Image (cartoon, rainbow, N blue to C red; front, side, top):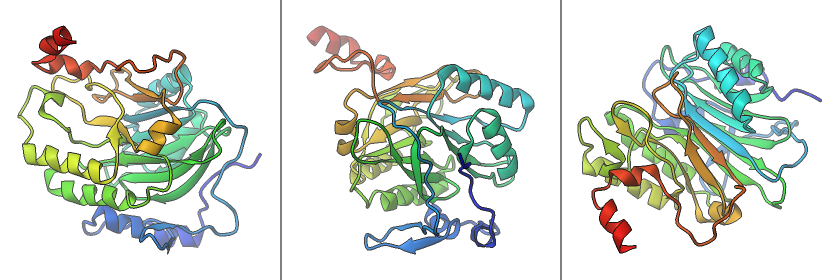
Length: 312
């Protein structure tokens, strides 16, 4: 079977971002990859002869891990990542803040058993993304930048592809609006079931943070309004295990995706090598409790919880 690797042609080299001045995430979509314009106003990768897909057998469920690893430069971090992925055996993995270059990330990814992937190198000691998938998944790349990877995925028991956007929001306050504009731009296409997962570096409500300086309401409102405009709804999760607990890692999806995977769930997995918990998303659960509400750990921080439980 041919290995699915990005070509290192002159065309790709021309498309590589050069960060001599700050660009908005929307600019990066246009500059980081060869694209063609579509009627919906978005930009997508051109298909040059060979398809950017990896085809294999279909599955009836997909396990997806999104994780801000906070650096993979040490051999210890790589070993722990390899053990973690072997333990959970995900089909798709999205890693953020790898903080290493493209060549080193490809080496790390392959050592973890993922021959197929898209590696976006860090800018100095900041950033770095990797989207990796097993050979039994069909993945088609749409677009990418230093803060997102947008792709289509296909799996068994569905006759249509679903869209997966891996998203890494800026931790810097002055960049927030640029990233919400990027998400809005991606959200113009609502033709597919759509999942967005990653580190948004923002919370939706004040009770999603415990400790530290309270978040400004206008910033949380801007995040909520962006998700609403993109027709994305939260699908569960809890706090990261840090001394200042806040729910900035999450998965959101549109109604089409939630109908396609009605029993999907997300768990935050504890791991000490990063102050962010990995998000494990499973598109199919063994136990289905139709009509019963799911329990989210962050509910325990709400002062009205006891009253609501008694009323229920």
